[in-house]
Every structure is written in C-alpha cells, then in structure tokens.
Image 1 (tube, rainbow, N blue to C red):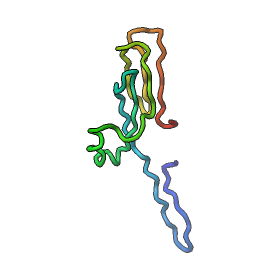
Image 2: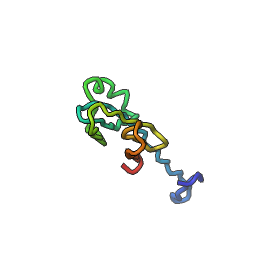
Image 3: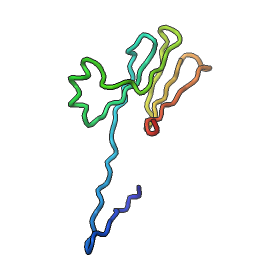
Image 4: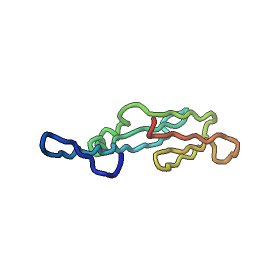
Length: 105
C-alpha cells in the first residue's frame, strides 16, 4: 500500500478510508515433545488475555513441528524480519538449514 492517503468520494465530500493495521503475532519455539520441536503462533493483541491459558498449555495446535532424528539433537533458531531460520544441527556444516516464512504461512 502506498504512503499516500487514500480518499473515496461520498456524494459531495471526500471520506478517508481507514487503514488496515497489520495483525501482530508472536512465534514461540519450544522443545515440548519427545520427538522434537514445535513452533506456536500467538496473537499479540490477545496475549495478555491468554496468559492464564498459557500456564496450562498453548492455545491451538503448533503451526510447525520439527522432528529431531537423533535424541538430544540441538537445533538453532533465530528470527530475521518475518522469517524464522532453523539450523538443524549447528555443529555440522553439511546438515540443511530451514526457513519458515511467517508472511506466507
């Protein structure tokens, strides 16, 4: 969307269209199951309302589950813009690195 203000004509007067505010989400990566890692998406606007719910578990299903083939395998996670970068085994140079794009997911 351009930075110029958008106007609609309503009869004899111009009416400003409301801008859409992008929805903000928080992504949390947890080692919460015995086979690997889970990524959860939480709506930032309702985060304070769901604090009590988070103590018993995350609302909804995980948006992504990453199984670790080797027990105790460490994965590296980092955020870059709207992407989550995943190093499946940071100690080994030949293992794949994954990218989770939160914009298109």
